[in-house]
Amino acid sequence: MRLLFGLLLLCFSLTVHSLELHNIRFWQHNTHITRVMLDLSSPASYNIFTLTNPYRLVLDLRQTTLNHKIARIPAQHPILKKIRHAKRNKHDLRLVFDLKRPVRTTSYLVAPDQHGGHRLLLDIAILDKAIQPKLSPELTKSKPVIKPLPTRPKLESLQEPIQPTLLAKKDIIIAVDPGHGGIDPGAIGKQKTKEKTVVLAVGKKLAQLINAQAGYKAILTRSTDKYLKLRQRIEIAREHQADLFISLHADALPNEQTAYGSSVYMLSQSGASSEAAQWLAQKENSADLIGGVSLSDKDDLLASVLLDLSQESTLEASALVGQKILKSLATVGKVHFKKLQRAAFMVLRSPDIPSILVEMAFLSTPSEERKLNNPQYQNQLARALLQGIKNYFAEYPPTGKVAFKE
Image 1 (cartoon, rainbow, N blue to C red):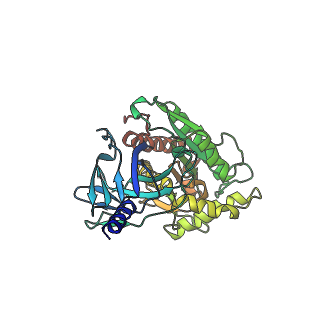
Image 2 (cartoon, rainbow, N blue to C red):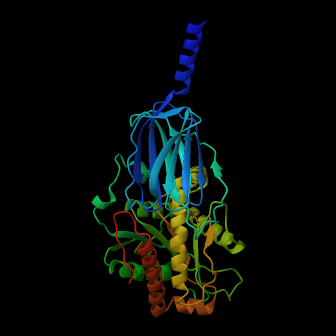
Image 3 (tube, rainbow, N blue to C red):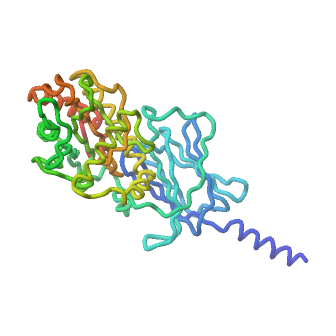
């Protein structure tokens, strides 16, 4: 009987401690997001939640033992302070990530493949107070997510941890996208001013100003009266590994000659933030049908990309740069919307590039049309856009790149 009891106890012990944590690795995608990879002996059952006062991220791994010495976190890390560990309920392992800022976390279990064995990935992104509600002092729990790792071009290409101090300093790339073009004239004013013409003029001036700044480089999606599908504009920005995509427009409202001022938009997952934003979003999206190409077959793919955390981080960055640019545009004249607007513009749907759309003025308003045709006013708009861009990157420079305020 004692022998049988001993065998049962041994089997129970082996069953309880069936999972080992072999290694913890880190990747710094940018100043907003860190990826943590845990190498495991088998699939994990786990729970994640955050705590405040101070900020902490807690990961409980069930029936797990630690078979690895946890590395120290560099003091200059933008998100993490240190990692602590302890046994919990005798059989579980608790990891506590001490944080410098509040965060949002998404987790993934990855099955063995050519890159490694069982892994648990945590993407830890800064939860910016400027665009998110305040954290509750209570625990914020998230259910474990078990799904294949989504494709992330910039993150997945990193096979070894990056040392930011070893990265060569490169120019900050700004993709300037003058809207419409070619067979798509865009809005047309009372004096027959075409949107495609004035946005190209401002776009060229903005690109010239950007290229005159040390550490910056502009690329134009179009420099002539050329038609581009909305998807092509995104592809051009991604081909050049742009750090920001800014689409320039000058719209018109039907039967309205009193609308005025600039507006700044970012992508919204849940739809437009106002009736005007919804109308403009539908109008801009329909432009892709001018060349005879339907977008209906891409909706599901884009929706899945938007759910990915890399898109969440991109949306946060888009909100921050949008706010900077909106504030700068207010120095040129009154703005149409005092707050950053959100709409489902197709051209803003890049999953890994912060993207904004600027409606510079309304061609349907005669006084606004005259201003948009004035080279001096075009210069003022371009300089305001430049200043907003520089203010953002001075505060949030991409990894390996440096920007300075004037």
